[in-house]
Image (tube, rainbow over all chains, first blue to last red; front, top):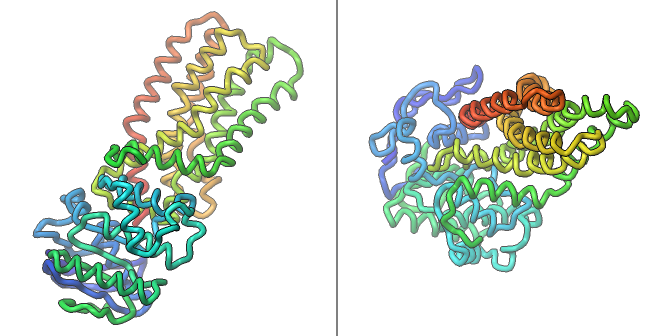
Length: 201
Length: 226
């Protein structure tokens, strides 16, 4: 369970949001909505522990995330705005290294199966440079299948995905929720999933 | 891809080596830069072998400093731009360990080739065999210092406009101890004085930077990521 109390975020002189308060129990998801520049990504970065908030606390299972960084980051799966994909490496290598750097081993067969599930068979050995925006996004989302995590924080997961991939994505989140995980996502579209709430900044 | 459970430190090294292998021009450019800078001196000074012997250690060391500086800005910048650095900071593994892996990879790509090619260049300066060996040893101890201190500078100037020039201004003064003791070791031996003192001090600088640089680099990177 994630609980956020009295969170205030300031960028330069501008206060983006203040006294934000919410709780996210297991098996639930939260959509963060708001106009461009409202502070959606800033909020996600604070929750992930990348940025320090001006004020307020973020608790994961009752423990402040700053004090148990390593435990928090084991439970957290964050897919940010930027892809964290290396253009020079192919999708398989990208996944192998990104999982490895987080201390999760992945067998080549599991990596290939995940890429296949997101419709990237035949592209495993092509440098990411040659992939389209949507295909790059699919590589990123394949990580969701491979990297265990109790809370998913996804920044605009539906961007650049076609109808079929969006459905796959929704199914993945549904499956994750069924297993007792939780998810926070930003999106401008309504998300066809039950058990969620919406926070507008 | 045969070790799915290799340690994150080793994986960070392997990843950067693989990326370097896909960008061979960058390595070759830095190495050629080193060769050309060092070659210019004998050409400019003329065939006075006594003088050349005297300036050789300094010339090779300055070449090594400049060659290191050339690639330093790209140590973290690409990973910062595509979000990989963010993912590393969010890894349950120690961020410092991953950063240390990147620094080791940087040395293997930019420092080690300089060490290996130095004796060949030293021959042009008419250095005797014994001095060539000492020169290699001093560079072997010294080039890791260049990568370690350089990483701190690269992290501090990450995302700063015109960071390249600032990086040089920041880092070159910090390279002075390594330059003095490194080049000094070979010079002292040529002059008939022992080189042990210089090597001890160079080793001490290496140990201090090994201990502090990864930690300082990580702290600077966390600030850059905010």
